[in-house]
Structure formats: C-alpha cells, structure tokens
Length: 347
Ligand code: SF4
Image 1 (tube, rainbow, N blue to C red):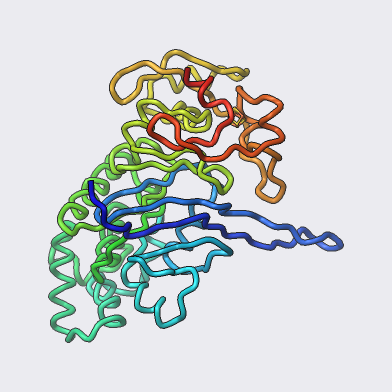
Image 2 (cartoon, rainbow, N blue to C red):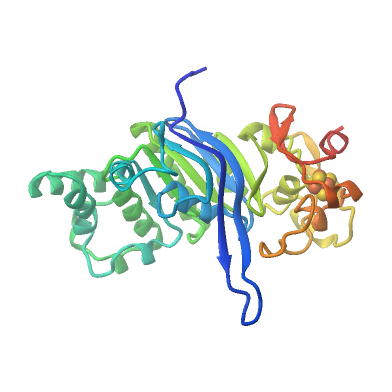
C-alpha cells in the first residue's frame, strides 16, 4: 500500500450559489456541493456517480479551478487550490484538464485538428512551432487518428472520433489529472466501449489519474477503482468499485444499480411501481444475488432540500428518524455509507 499523499484531496468541500426566486421573494441558496470529502491518487480512477442535478458538474468546476469553492479544502499536488492566488492557479491549471460530454461543442469548428492540438502547447509552453506540430502528430497517433486527419475540421468526424480529438487535446499538456464529465454518454454503445478502452490504455501508458463523472454505472464499472455516489450535493456511499457493485449498502446506490440497463432485473423491477420495492433478482459482480431497491420519483429541488436524510422521500426504508436527522458518512463493512439503517438493511 502506498503512503504517498494523494494527487487530489477534497475535505468538506462545499459550493453554494445564491439564486433569484423571482420578484418580491427572498433569494434562495442552492447547496450544489455540501461538504464532500474524497481523494484520488496518481494513476487511479475515482468515479463520481449520481443523477442529473446531484452536484457532479459543480464538483468538476471546482477541481478544474473554473470556480472557487465556498468552503472546505481542495488540494492538488499538495497545494491548496481553494485559497491559491492567481499565479499559483496559473501554474496548477495545466495539471488538470477536462473532457466534456459533447466534443462537438467543446472543439472550435473552424480549426483543423492539428491546430486544436497545437493550441494548448502554444499558449502554455515555449516549444517551437515544429516541436508543437510533432507533439500534436504523436498524440494523434496515440489516440488512433490517422495522419491524413490533421487538416480536417471537427464536423468531418464521427462522434467517437471527435471525442478522440477532445481527449488528445486535453492530454497535450501531459496533465496529471483528467476530469471526464460524462465523456461517453453522447456516443453509441459500441463507440462508448472504444473510447473507454482508449482512456484505460492512455492511463496505463501515461500514469494519469481520472475523475470520471457519470450517471451510468455500467461505464463506471469498466473504468473506476473507487466509486463515490453523490445525492443532492453529498456523498452517500463511497468505496472500492468491486465492493460497491457486489454489495451496494445505501438504498440510493442499490436503486441506481437497479436502473442500470444490463442488470437483468431492470425491466421487471421498473414495472413494479409500489414500495417497499425489494426484488431478489439482481446479480452482483461475482454473480451473487442481492436485493434491489427501485428508484422512485425525481430528486428533490436543491432550492428546498428535504430535512434529515435528503433521500427519505424516495426511500422505501425511511423511518421517522430519517426525516429529522441527517445521517453522517460512516464506515460500514469496507465502505463509507450515510444511512441510519444501513446495518439493518444489509443484515
Ligand atoms: Fe433511507 Fe433513512 Fe437510510 Fe436515508 S437514512 S437512506 S431515508 S433508511
């Protein structure tokens, strides 16, 4: 086990936004991120999973230093990003790059591929033009683009190839951390596998760490070592991937897994609309059967989050205590889980 300090470390990280609620009404406070703690080591992949609106993209904006957190600590390479001055941020930013969900929107349609790859080096390094071009061509080859592609524009490529260009551009500065925000969710399933394989190969070659953001647990299952499940700005469960898939402990994690298409109980479970929604049909990673929880309703509004456990309105196991007391993230059987009834549910 390595004792080196993490590449990225968040402690009680929070990002709140003040929003207008219309004329004659007091402004509201959205706690998009509400005290999350996690770490990512060199060359590892942490997956952040949750439904739309859970705070995943807000987290990406903090880690990529696009926004400053409201409170808490965020350390990159041991340096405090949350309170860093502009010079420090400028020095640290090349260490973290991002790949977005929609490569068509993130690539300038008026620029040729070779220019798109040259740009990060031209802005951030003193390399000569010919050295930059050589580096761009080498990276194109590394991500599976052919030499004749270098003079083409983004619209001339398929979605999968465009995402390869986006990955290549993100890696031109040799970052230590890549934040991938739903990087394959806009692609066909067959292409998703190709891009995931590419990301895993690049990680092995370059020792890069990934913060992989997704709503899709099947995608996470392929690429992550550690999984953190986010619900309404808080981590409700985190742990090693194999454990989270084999024995999801939090009712929300169970529900997310039950809604994953390739789990064979999904269709039948979705047809059961009434609580308490347990089904003996899901299989874990090792083929072991486990109990599922079907996800009901929509996530609550972050403008008026529920009291106590934010999941209580959708949870088949909710009791009175859940409505009044916020559960803490505490160790449970090799993972961290925020649920008052975790021991009973997993007995
Ligand atoms: Fe469900 Fe209560 Fe656990 Fe929240 S604390 S997940 S409402 S049982």
